[in-house]
Length: 557
Image 1 (cartoon, rainbow, N blue to C red):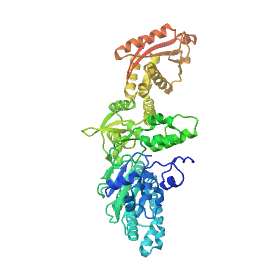
Image 2: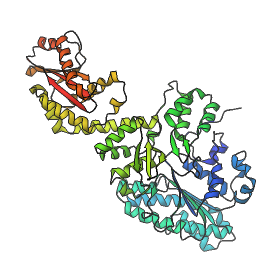
Image 3: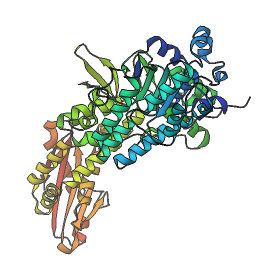
Image 4: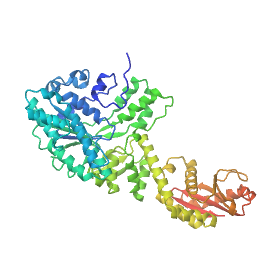
């Protein structure tokens, strides 16, 4: 039997079921939704967690005239009474706001019209209806041409469908918050909020033709922002145990997938890299990661795991977070990267302008967008947050390290004073500025290496700083001199000065001085000054620098 094709990038249920694609059965979602639904239901999940595929599944299940054979052999087909009552029994309006964006409000509004027009065109067959009058048919034609009132368009479609089928309508809105994010980024948030609020108000509140609605998104946008004209939706959040297993892949589902493609030996790696998202009471993998990892393993000789999620997520969130971080926050980032947890009170409903206003709000965004996960909420309402897996940990390290390097190297006044102190022999100024830089840093690389290699972190840090300054120095690392290889050697031949730096990592704060002296002794014992003297350098300074975490001691020979 021919093996099914991996559904890389596929979020259409019909394609998944008709084009020999591998499909992990999530149809149990239909039963649990019907058992728990409110009039309007909001599911908040990170990006690439199967929201669009599930919405496509709901559309195909509920819509009148859909192909019922798509569900043959799936779990929901065993629920015979439920299927008899609900399968193919409702008119359905299904739209995705994922691509509604633009540099201006007018462009975004036109994109929203495109979404409405495409959905209205699906009902062109109603032009032959005996139940609709000419005005109804004209209204549908106008909507498919982008003519009419955009805000009330979904309600108008609902009324026409109700008139045709004498059944209330199910409305599915995928990625409902995407237009608001783009509007906030491009400066027309207030206009977009007003439009979306009116659209949802007409469609989901003052709509007597509505059976129920389902929305998906990353964030639970504040009621005061877009839901003020709408009764509170029933929210199925990341900590809700209801419907918790239907977005994302469970451990058993991943094992079966790997086994199907004879990739079971990669299970431990897959779990380490892509598992760890806690939704309700279920630990889940990101579907995008697992599907792409399996595809990668089948088509590449290099079997090293890759960071797939980073390429599709808004990683600027981490940069904004780091920019607002104070010393306490940076310490908490270090704890997270070291595999520990931090406790935070999370605000789950925000407006987009609120998001970047405080670092506390950004903690909540890191949680809801999938950079962090929650394993427990204590009796005081504090969320216990951790980094879910190796993929996101690497993303944190790369992004925060880049931010730190940029932040450090952009402080030109401080760095100039620091570097100028070396040829002057001003050990106190060097130590003072270096301690300041260390306090501002996040010791990501330091915290991730064995004790015997910690010197490498500080060696790299000093090299980066010294090379970043336009002093026209020759900065060399581990070049042979005398009887050994000094850590750093800096020379400016035309001015006949140079300096040597030897680095040590201390046992604790109390031994910093001892290790700095040990560094100076090594410079003497191995005659590191010899090569500089041979070059005609007459002004030679020798520095022993000892580090311990965020502290240093600088001694001058």
